Each structure stands twice: as C-alpha cells, then as structure tokens.
Picture 1 (cartoon, rainbow, N blue to C red):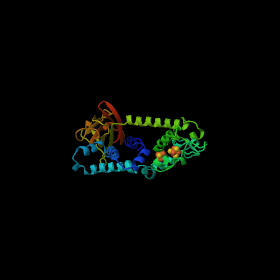
Picture 2: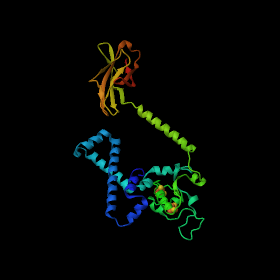
Picture 3: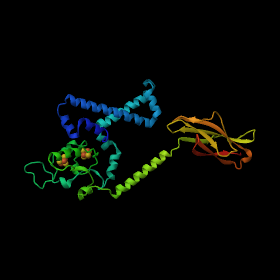
Length: 344
Ligand code: SF4
Ligand code: SF4
C-alpha cells in the first residue's frame, strides 16, 4: 500500500492534502483523467498480484495453462483470477487502512511489540507544544505547532498523531508531508512530525544504532543466511521409496531373493533433469517392473515399481537395510535407505 499504490497515487494526484482540496472542488476533465488513470493502474497491478498469488497456490505451469489455453477450458481458474484481482483492487483502492485496523491481526500484534525506543511516525511535542494558531496574539513562548489540524485532516485513519502513537497509525507518512508543507510555509524548520522514537524526542538526541537494532540486524542476517542455505541446498528431486505391503519376498530360480518396491519421484527444479538410482552393494541388483525412468521434466512427478534382488547366500538376517543413491547425471543428490526382507 505505502510502497507501491500510495506512491503511484501521490505521483498522479499529488500529496494527500492536495488531493483533499482537489476532491472538494468541482471535478474537471483533468481530474477525471487522473482518477481514471490511477484506477486503471491499480487494477492492472491487482491483476498482476492475483496472478502471482494464484501461481503460488496452483503452480506456474497450471497458471500458464489458464493464460494460454481457451477460457472455456479453464472457467474456474479464470474466474479465480478475476475474483482475486477484484478483491486486491477493492482492498488497495478503497478499503485500504480499514484492512490494517480492522482485518489484519499483524496491526494489533505490532502494537504490543513497540516500546519507547521504537522508530515510529511521531510528533515532536517538545518542539511543538504549547500549540497555538498563527495570530497577532500568538505568544513568543508558543511551540512550533500552529494548530492548523492539517495532519489530522490528511490522516486516512482519522487520528491525531499529536496525541501520541496509536494503534490505528499505518505509518503512511501523509501527516509528515502535510506538516512539513506548513512548516515551510510559516518559515519554521521541518520534521515537527517525523520518524523517531519517544526516547529520542524526549532527550533531543538523534536516533542512532542501539543494541536492540544491532541484535535484530544480526538475527535478520542470520535468518537470511539460513534461508539462502536451505534454498541453495534444496534437493532437486523428492524421492519416496516404500516396500509394497502385503508381499514379503520372492524366491527366484536364479537363487536370488527379491522384494518389490514402489517409488515416487518429483522433479522440484525448474528444468528437465536426468535421473537414475544406484545400489551401493555390487552383489545386489535393481530390476525395474517397467521401463526405467531416465529423466524428468520440471514439476513432473512419476511412480515406478522395481525389484531389489540379492543372492540368497549374502543375506544374514531376516530384515536388512539396502542403500540406494539418487543421481542426476554424474551429480549425487541423496541417499535412501529401504528395508529388505530376506527370510520368512
Ligand atoms: S498518523 Fe500520520 S502516518 Fe499515521 S496513519 Fe495518520 S497520516 Fe498516516
Ligand atoms: S500539521 Fe503540523 S502544525 Fe499543523 S496541526 Fe499538525 S502538527 Fe501542528
């Protein structure tokens, strides 16, 4: 809202106080054009967000099918894109702060995470008070706030930031812009309302790196590092191998004992990859029930059945472990362990 939609709105229609004046006056063609352009861009962005959101749920491939194939074949998917686009558009164009203050639980949660060192949109009451309107009778001891109420008028959630930090504040900074404009107009230094902490305002010291900010930064860098490691270390295949239940073992004419397994493989990478299994024990062989899979396309999942056969004389115990290595070409991916039943 603040980093994209509000920025576009300010870029097309100007800051909040200018928009208020413009909305009160009779709308000219230029105003209609600006508003139309804004809503068109808002809907376009909402459409993009809806596509990204849907691709997260159903996958990029399914979404590409919805986009490229005839609408008649994807009524549900197509309707979902439209409904999501409309919801995002209504949220960003109209509901806005109502979502932050009424719907979103994070807003409530954030309130309890703040303390006097938290950097928030804050009014410098030391400098601003006692507030007094600009007049001939204004006392010299009056503060910098000229009590114009512009910060209240432009606030989308209708609060008065001069009363201190409130849960309804979405940090949109409209009050900062409005107040700075008044400060410039009346020849006062800007930033009577600014990003700052309660303690900084009270002490008059500029905000600096405190221990908490340093600690959070270290935690954040650590988490980013961990996430990058997991992303880079992510196996391209998801392989599950289970012995087929119900059938204990097969005694073959060539003197080997066989167990039947079912394997499910999914290629989680973004491109086609070669695939094969290798059994570590040279005396043990792997016999596919059908044609062995040698490669998988991106996102493709398949199921395969195969036997593991071992010479009877190499079997020591009723239940033994067999190691299978998953390879993609020459690259080792992971090792799998399966149980092998060698005796009744
Ligand atoms: S108090 Fe200021 S920053 Fe907070 S919501 Fe209102 S205008 Fe936006
Ligand atoms: S906009 Fe600034 S000067 Fe005007 S009332 Fe708000 S804090 Fe005071």
